[in-house]
Length: 361
Image (cartoon, rainbow, N blue to C red; front, side, top):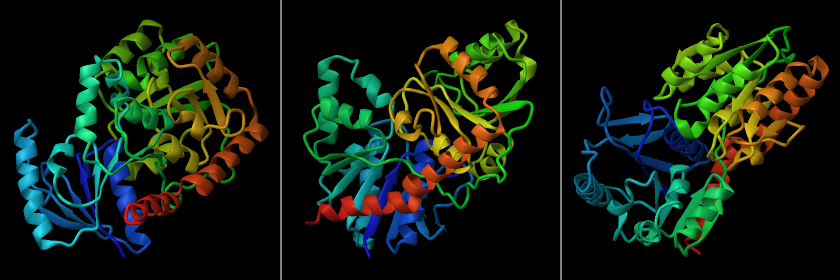
């Protein structure tokens, strides 16, 4: 048994990809016999300590602004490590990096954020600062090959490996028989932020020729108002239901009410929403960026379209409305099977553990 300490920027009840990934990976590691501690900032109405799914969760109060955040977390870690025997530190999110220097433990960092890709557009000296922040890290894992390449391009010279996000295929289960009604529902389950392509998605809805569809949007964010303006200007707002931010525990039922899940992202790792959709038997319509092509086998489990192209997305959505029940069942079954075979969290946890153990050899 290994003693693993996750240090993460987000953890449930916080929403988002980092929180979900850290929680599900920790839970899966516990299920295969490992001891996992999580250290994350305390948020409103959360206790200082609790056990969640067999994970010991510690929540210190941390000021978000640096350097105060780094000082506080570093002091907390020193006290924590005096009380607990830890084999590996695994960081999720960039903010805790500086606080983990000089701990004399193997340090693993998962590079989750597509915002890291934007940093490659910055001047070289800014990229060099990223390399300095990563200099003490022994291993970098990333949920897309694009993020692996970006990690190397900023100057990190340690080992970098692709490890996909995962999905709980027992929590997210497929509808059987696969549901293909007369009126098709598309799901956008995303934070409504620019990088997720949500404005292009709204534009695509207004460009569709078919009227035989509805759209469900699960998520909140800064772009909702602009999306509503675009939809209203073309008389399409009545086709769209905005559910707002949703807890992950409520998502299985949301997926089961729709027929296709759309990933219109500009940047993306192996999308957790995409994986949950696949596990539920939903074919994906996604952009050909980041980790999305690793999820979608074009024409087998879903369809790929160019990013930033509202017309291409509209055309593909029009096309899938007409594929028929038999073809839909084929796509759905293949999508579910791919999720089970390659992306169940038990598979991802064992792969991650093998990389931990490689640091001790």
